[in-house]
Structure formats: C-alpha cells, structure tokens
Image (cartoon, rainbow, N blue to C red):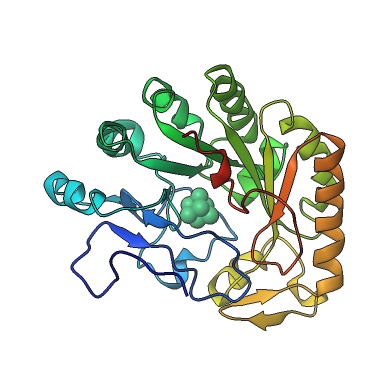
Length: 285
Ligand code: SF4
C-alpha cells in the first residue's frame, strides 16, 4: 500500500493523492493530482467525468488561494499529474491564465510535473516549461481533424496537437502520447498511422482501449454500435473482451517498437516494460 504524506481526510484543497477509484488494473506510480479547473469544456464523447462532476463539460476555474496551494506544495514528495479529471488547457484557460499562474508557482518550487493535455495551448507556456522539471503527455486518438470533431468536439484538432509536439520537442521538453482510447470501428484503423506520425516527437506511448461508464455509454451509442460487443464490468468501467483489447494493444506495442519508442498500457492488465505507464519517467530531473 502506498503511503502518502497527506490524505483526503486532511484539509487538502487542491492537491490530492492520485486515486484511480482503487482500480486493480492501475499501474501508476505514486503521484499527486492537481486540476486548476473543475470540469472540462473539451466535452469528449467518451469522457466519464460526467458520472461524478456536475455540469462536467463546462469548466470552472477553481478559486485558488495561492498561499494555501504553496503550503500544500511544501508537503509534496513526488511528482504531480495535471490534470486527471479536467484538462488544464481547457479553452477557458486562454483568457483566464490560471494554469499559467500555477505553473509559475510550481517552477519556483522545483515541483516535478506531468502535464496531460489535448490542447496546443500548452505551447503558450513553453517559456516556463523548458525551465521546469516536467514532461507533457499529449492525447492523440486520431489524425483526422473531422473525426476528432466527432469524438472530442471542443478540443483543438489533432493537426494542432502534432504541431505543438513539434514545438515542445524543439524546446527540449520530453513528451509522450496517449493513444487513448482506442474505439472499435472509430479509430482502430489508425493505430499504426498515429504511432508513426508522433514518433519523431516523443519517446513513449501509453495506450488504452475504450472503458466507458454508464454515462459515456449513452453518448457513445450515437457514434457506434455498442451492443455489438460483449462488455465486462471491471470496477466502475465497462471493458471490451480481452481478446479484442489485447489485439489492439499488440498492434500499438509493435508500432512503438518499430519506431524505437517505449510502450505502456493503461488499466488493461496488458504487460509492458517501460520506465512508467504514464510517461512520468520522462520528467526532467
Ligand atoms: S479532455 Fe479529458 S477530461 Fe476533458 S472532456 Fe476530454 S476526456 Fe474528459
């Protein structure tokens, strides 16, 4: 059992131990979770934050007391993952700059940070990031901007995300890609193409198959025939049959190795051999 310096029972407000609903298949290292926003306006069709965040697809900035945030940061003894139930570069960030303010505080304190995003807005902060102990994990689920509009309607198109990866690489900021989720009949035909396209810019790929909950199941019905598959409930999520999941992950792994990249799966029970699953091993020291 991992021991954290503080727990949810204490009066932590902003930074919490990462807890993937005690998922048995989670292989994440010990880390903390921080989100400048509640909810996320990217409104991805497969996203399950609607199952526990009210009005989830309308991001609201948190009212952050920076003094309190700094007190919490003083207790952090490993890296922070930003963010897990929202994107720190949700469209509102462009005007509000809350994530940028937090980054400045993290930078001053030498905090190790893993940024998970779907937005090219991250390159606005390259001036800070290149002097930080950080790594960026960019989610790319398709190379087709039109298809992305269908599944991630309010997120920047993948063409912009690829451009962002190129700029991050030019600035020596280590990156990984999340090829997550793989959705049968929607993006499973693109697996090798995606890996080949991102390979020049990243060192590691994390992949995962679609794991809807009840709420996202309903939305997903609009784009593909859910009932064609025999779903198995594991924890809070529905999983595709193992043979389908593992076939997809075999393909991702093969494409990664062909390109000299490390590979990991996320909450799949699929074996991998990489420095970490989430790409945190790339964080600069
Ligand atoms: S970017 Fe992430 S948190 Fe935001 S809607 Fe999409 S899946 Fe959900």
